[in-house]
Image (cartoon, rainbow, N blue to C red; front, side, top):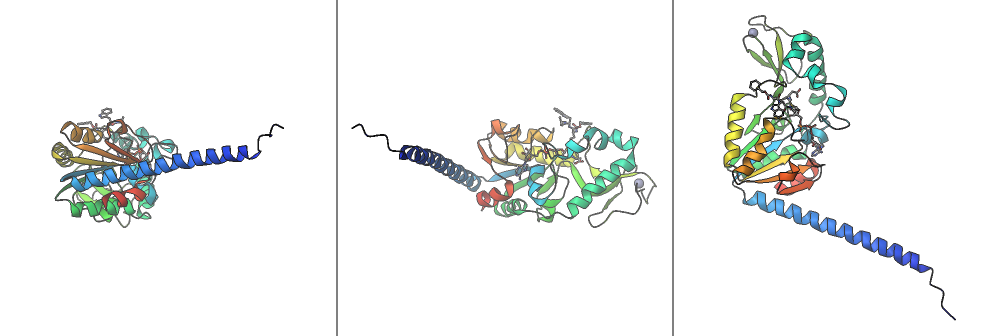
Amino acid sequence: MERRKAPEDKRTSYKRKEKGSSSLQRVRILFGMVVIEEARRLIKKAEKVLVFTGAGISKESGVPVFRGKDGLWNKYSPEELATPHAFNRNPSLVWEWYRFRRDLIRRAKPNPAHYAIKKLEEIKNEFLLATQNVDALHIRAGSKKIVELHGNIFITRCMQCRYEIEEYERDSEEKVPMCKKCRGLMRPGVVWFGEPLPAHALRKSFEFAKKADLVIVVGTSGVVYPAAYLPFLVKQHGGKIIEVNVEESAITPHADIFIKSPAGEILPRIVG
Ligand code: BV8
Ligand code: ZN
């Protein structure tokens, strides 16, 4: 009598599927570990290290990024708020927006990714951190060898005599602050679209990129120029690119190692 196929087949197929999927997971985990090991090896070996960061490194600190579905540029248009033209047109609207972001950032704290970069600065003889972030969280984490390519949101600067004040703790009373030296209009100390980057930050970061043997790119979409040239400069001069991002960016196709992970979870593991 022909034996009816045992019902368990489904189970075995399920098991097989399960076995199949878990082995795939195991491969992924193994591959992930290999990639992390490779990144650790490259970082250990590197003598001149550049770290290039974007808004993604501060996401786990609660500071919103710019692009993507919950990015700032979804709700607010950069043209209306982050250009010299917008400020001349409506300085109080622009100040309102920068004060909203200042308050948000004041309530944020540096996360393990910020501290891992500070640690790397202490380990490496030749090191530079070039950040696009204006949130000063790297500075609050203790980074010293840093250039702020797009300025610092807590700096308030006179548009006439360039007199500057730092407002880390609180903002001045006036809705639109005026300079106490020349009564000129004061603006946030950030670089707006269409404005040149601070010459020293540009020169220092580009010079360092040309001699760096490794750049670690963390949490940037890599679409804002001239900052986004930095990883390519390292590559053009024979250096390697390690990228950490929760998703692929404009830099990923050029990365030697791409680690798809939140920066706060992975940086302490690859820098340690
Ligand atoms: C200038 C300060 C000329 C203000 C900012 C060449 C080609 C094309 C365009 C241009 C070009 N050259 C110039 C331009 C124009 C323009 C530009 O690049 N436009 C782009 C948008 C097309 N550049 C300029 O205007 C620059 N100036 O060129 O001047 C000149 C020269 C001489 C004389 C006169 C004029 C000035 C650019 C600076 C603008 N200012 N910020 C403010 O903050 O309010 S830019 C601002 O946006 C940030 O600073 C930052 O740089 C940028 C946002 O980029 P990201 O940081 O990458 O953030 P984003 O949200 O895009 O991505 C976040 C990433 O993190 C994502 O990939 C996400 O997946 C990832 N992520 C999320 N969570 C995590 C994570 N990763 C890891 N872990 C997580 N947990
Ligand atoms: Zn002034």
